[in-house]
Amino acid sequence: MHAQHMDIILIFARTRDVGLCRPCLHEKKTDMEQFGKILIVDDNEDVLFALNLLLEPYAEKIKVAVTPDRIEHFMTTFRPDIILLDMNFSRDAISGQEGFDSLKQILSIDPQAVVIFMTAYADTDKAVRAIKAGATDFIPKPWEKEKLLATLSSGMKLRRSRTEINLLKEQVEVLSNATAGGSEEVIIGDSLVMQQVFSTVEKLRDTDANILILGENGTGKDVIARLLYRNSPRYGKPFVTIDLGSIPEQLFESELFGYEKGAFTDARKAKAGRMEVATGGTLFLDEIGNLFLPMQAKLLTAIEKRCISRLGSTQATPIDVRLICATNADIRRLVDEGDFRQDLLYRINTIELHIPPLRERGNDILLLAEYFLQRYARKYQKEMRGLTREAKNKLLKYAWPGNVRELQHTVERAVILGDGSLLRPENFMFQASVSRQKKEEEVLNLEQLERQAVERAMRLSEGNVTRAAEYLGITRFALYRKLEKLGL
Figure 1 (cartoon, one colour):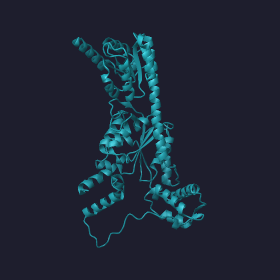
Figure 2 (cartoon, rainbow, N blue to C red):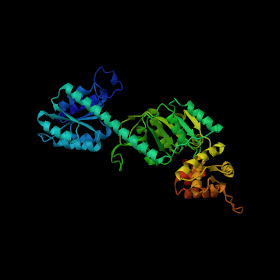
Figure 3 (cartoon, rainbow, N blue to C red):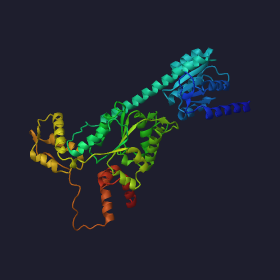
Figure 4 (cartoon, rainbow, N blue to C red):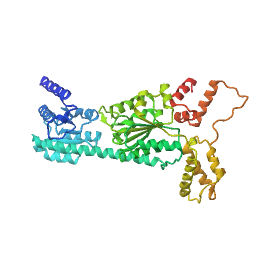
């Protein structure tokens, strides 16, 4: 008996490996839709064999299990679309409790699972109870072929609907968070350099090309990214943002690719990653220059294969996203120094868009200052009409190292603290110069200077390596090397 059991299992293994996952399923001549991936759990090997044979033309892939012991394994690695589940497994068992226990286990792993019970005629009452407990449907044994296929067809439609609803919820959550954390967008500029930027954006209106936006901090790269999105064929689909500079390396995969329940300690439920949520739309990867090399390789693989696998799963999920990336780093210097992959750069910079710093935009400074003044005068209910000539001259002479973002905060502060109808020079307070004169008598060698600069940057950033690197004008990777060299 034992040898006979082993022979049948081997037959199933060969069937599954050879014939059930083919890229050309659409060539089968059948009026039935594809049922996706099916898991069949039944202690009767004849039933498994018959169902395997019957459903093979309609399924993307089939897995079978003789006992419920393998359910957890298949739910996490195979991720079936439909589960055909028997109600009793032990010899002489008739209560159906094993089926109920298995249903509870399945739904704890995937609350949206489509479970179809298989039951003998006498167990119809138990099947109805199972539906109340979360099962989708039931089919009697022996089954009628057309009834079975119709039930599976309905189950697959339900599965697709649940998947779409869950993805939509993920998109709403991500987009709500992005909206809550974002600021009012403003694109103002009459200077020649900004007109060139607007001209390039207009030329990209009907393209789906990946775009790399380059520019200093505060120049409005995120605003340009949203303008590109609004002008694209993907407008109306998700626009998902992820700040790679703020994500710890150990959370990169779970944020970008998602995870299954139980993939790590705090993974209490499955969650779609940003790439999956953005499918059909646009994914904005901000500060891509901060991405570590191992993560660059994973991102490159996802872009090239156009699919991802969630943490805790071996199943590939197709993705369809347009990439817009941005960085304030000298990306080609990073490539030359070995800190950024050349092949990844080729993938993300089909078009490069350079955003000029505010100091190179001339009278755009005054246009933006007037705009921010009017906005914050309304917000804080101040009767302010404009700027004095002296105030305008002061704004034009300042270098604006923080660019548009610094100008915005400077004007807001001036409106809050200012009096009268016009803002004057004394209302504008600029950040202290970052270049301070050293004491003439202080003579330090280069290593001491470097150590002092790194220590000060780490203090100012309160230990945040990304911000410290920005203070020093170097990449995170270069700062890590200096910290190691200096023993800090």
